[in-house]
Length: 474
Ligand SMILES: [Fe+2]
Ligand SMILES: [Fe+2]
Image (cartoon, rainbow, N blue to C red):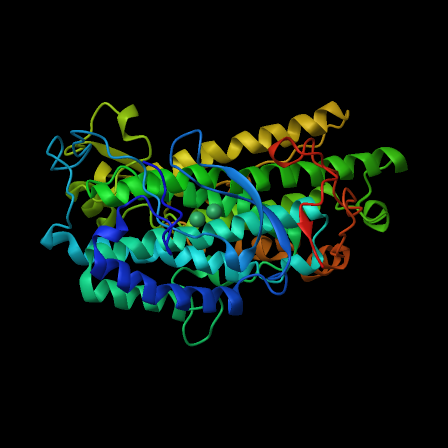
């Protein structure tokens, strides 16, 4: 289905055939633009940015590149094509036709799921709004803005569902999505992680690698939903999300590569010497990784969750790639849950599999996170070093679930509270680490030039050279 760009709101959902809905969304549109100008990227609104826009949802048309000023970006409503005869793939309704309208009994739960997902999209734009001032290169600046405009479009995706399927409450929720702000004391974003500002580029790369990947897994779960419009919306969002994680993976890889170059030049792996030379030592990279991985794990929720069981049973939210499983109903299946026994040891509890769905998704997420770590380690190995980056144990530094607050070291071992407190600076970025990383953040905007703490990318965007002027500033 081609996207109609003649419309004020580009879409592939025949918006012009539903005048009431079209008018409602056209009323929301200026509010969105006001939000973008106020809380989107600080400055740069008049810069010409080389961005991709979807022109259709198939493989050919979804990434069309051109130069655009961000406020003129064509945010719109794009759903993956419908699948003829699609049936619900899991839970008690397994095998029945998917819903094209919201079933009355699931209305408030579905609205909550959509609002929670929708809230993270503008939140991340707000968190990252100051980063443009310290970009390590024009290539990176462009990638930041690409991520930002697409998160803005993901907000559109959720707002469309709220307007189209949830009547008046949906319209009110759509307004609220613009009224809550990341870090706002009175109206914060719904999820904790999305209220922390992302003030340096190492954090940005960690965020796009780990936190956008949480987004990927949430979207994959919702792409299985029995509510077909939600499933189709999320399927298309996933194509865009892939680039965000690419930015994170290659960003961290380039930081590591540059650090290794400096280690070679200096002939040492001494963190202080590496820092003096303007690069980020690997132990610091590891501490940032520990921080962002653990905070992203919390986004999946408690290991044992009656909400997760209900979402699965009712067909609202499935498992990523549900088709890979044998049993789609999971009525009597159980899950072995590992938890602290409160006496310094570990105990096992058998819980219904449906209640463990958050943990099932989290486990798939952890596996996906490992792929990048392996790639970064290959870069280190190739440079002839024995050092390795590693994901900390999923029990490390958790704030939600059975491991919340447990004194666990990055290897997953329960340690004493005293040791846990004492070794904190070994495991997590200290104020001094953060201050050092911030001190490196200086804006570099000559085409092709890179900040000293990061290596250039292997290739540019859309086959253009790395030194292409991806953002024209004046
Ligand atoms: Fe997103
Ligand atoms: Fe994203």
